[in-house]
Length: 223
Image 1: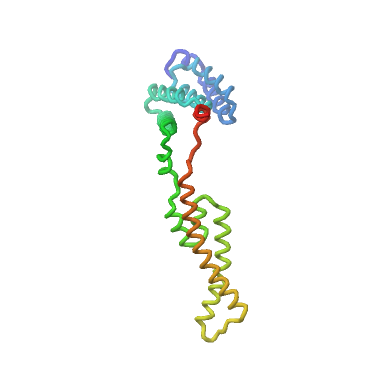
Image 2: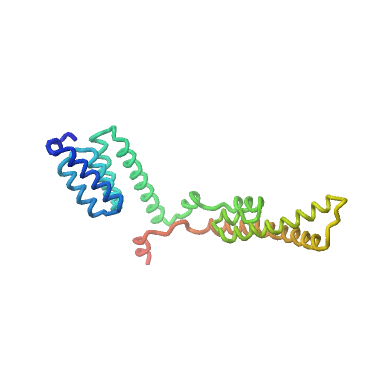
């Protein structure tokens, strides 16, 4: 700290304010944190830590632009403050992302979002081609994917047992093994074909949906 007030104030008292402010932020007592941050800025107006913590308070309040200014001030006071520099860069990225989203929503071109997080139908189908259910999980249909996966495993076991019996000349499969084996074999083929088709169709539906909802203020304008 290089202000007169900071020099006159005992270091112990400054540390107490730091700890008090950190605790208030940790327990999400934002009003208390804001009050303590103002006290800290009064006694150490040119302290890089004061401005960094004030930025943390503004960030907790959702005031990104003001938080960016506070972090920038902290970096200007002490260019070696790596934490403040990192926080400033992070807030700037958030502001750019919000600006990009707002401009995209206002333009009505939601296709720009699909390239970021859209599900590709071909990829979903390819995953189901490896084993039933994997494509559904990729599309976000977790319950359906898990059911198909376990059903596929249940059908695979008797089918494998039947094939093993066929490949063992000294072993003749019983009627039950043969029945279950054929059931598992044909049932598994049907599940496999359906799984690939369903995953591809689900991927098309997923890709066609907007991935985010417009902000409330834009929805109100449209109504």
